[in-house]
Image 1 (tube, rainbow, N blue to C red):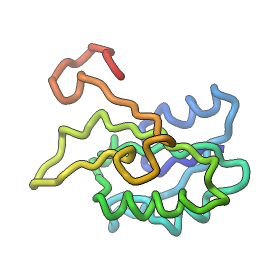
Image 2 (image 1 turned 30 degrees about the vertical axis):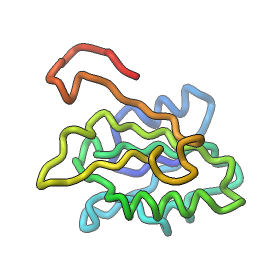
Image 3 (image 1 turned 180 degrees about the vertical axis):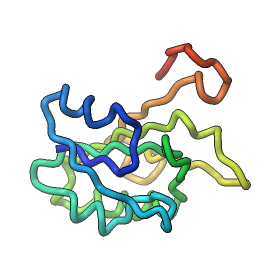
Amino acid sequence: EVVIPAPYWVSYPDIVRLSGADPVIVNCDPRKGYVMSPEQLTAALTPKTRMIIMCNPSNPTGGAYTTEELEQIAQVLRRPEYAHVLVLSDEIYERLTYDNFEHTSFAALPGMKERTLLVHGFAKAYAMTGFRLGY
C-alpha cells in the first residue's frame, strides 16, 4: 500500500498501481491548507503500507507543509511499527512559494534522510516547460 494525500497530482495512483501496489487516498481538509495531519496518516497506515507520497508544495493545491507539520508526520514514521515505511517526497515546486514561506525538505528532518526518495527537477523553478530533466 502507498498512502497519497488528496488532492494529488493525477498520475500518482496509476504509478502506484503500475508498481503492483494499492493506493490509499487520504482526503485532506481545504480549511487546513490541504495538509495531511498526523492523525490522518496514522489512520491510513497498515502493516501493508510501504510508502507515502508527499508533494510539497502540492500540485494541484499549492498547499505546503511547514517544518512543524513535516516533523509531526516524521514523528509518526519514527514509531517502531512504521520503521519500514518510506517517503517519496516530490519537491519539484519548492522554489514556487510565496509570502516568505520557507520550504523544508522531508529528508532534512532527523532520521528521515535514509527513508526519503526525493523527486525534483529544473522545469518548474526555471520556466523550462517541456524539459523532463529531473533528479
